[in-house]
Image 1 (cartoon, rainbow, N blue to C red):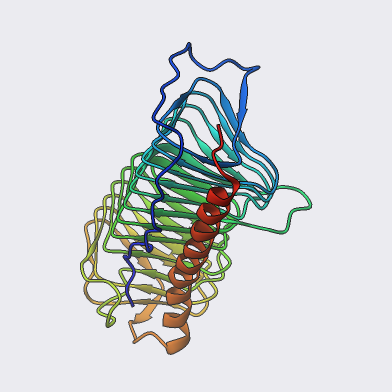
Image 2 (cartoon, one colour; image 1 turned 60 degrees about the horizontal axis):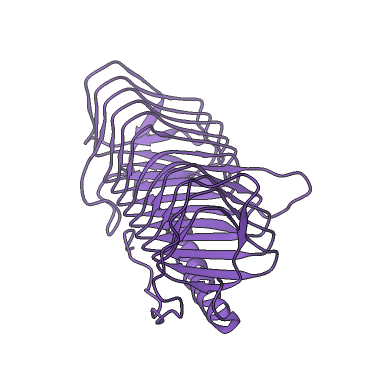
Length: 322
């Protein structure tokens, strides 16, 4: 299984906006630019809205205000900058590549948000009443402040999170080949989560979830290549779908309690603090467990490839946006 990958890059079109820069004061609350189509390397001193059902593709654009991706709308920004906050409404999609996001990004019942080689502040996924779509948070090779998710799937790979990550009721939370400077808290996960080849400069806890949960998970073929480093405690409690723990350096205590089945703990954990565990020896993953972990990444990768292609194609067909 290949956890770390780069989504296929779509062909970049030559945009029709001739690099004109609009020099103006910072964005005003009553000024809004709508985007349906494609735009190039200009500076917009306004808020930006992608209208319902439309697609917007920005290449090198700077937006000095807030951005709203309306219902069933799509926005892909590459090599650009957004100085305000980004709100993605129900069934909307936001895609940022090689871009800077100065404000928080919030999924409100959206289809999903994808960040690749981008920098930003908090990335949040919140539930919306009467909206079935849980959305996803997919972060690749990026540097952001935090992740907080109450819905959807969370997948972070090759990234740095400066203030930790928290999911409470999300479908799953996978952290691969990443650095978190803060706690990782996963509560009430429906499909578990993994922590693989990563460093957490804080505590890690998995509680009240359906699982499976894999932290390091031993020397499973094609799974994790290196050990995890966890600066604080590692706590895995009340997980019902299976818990697998191995190949971890733990600066605090290791706690595994009330898991059903009993947590499987390998011999390759180095624990500096106390051991408070109910455990059995680590076994080899069953095929169904590996398949579930593989599906997290594979499904998100396929969705992003399709959405990115559709967004760019629709935006180019719509013509210049400004």
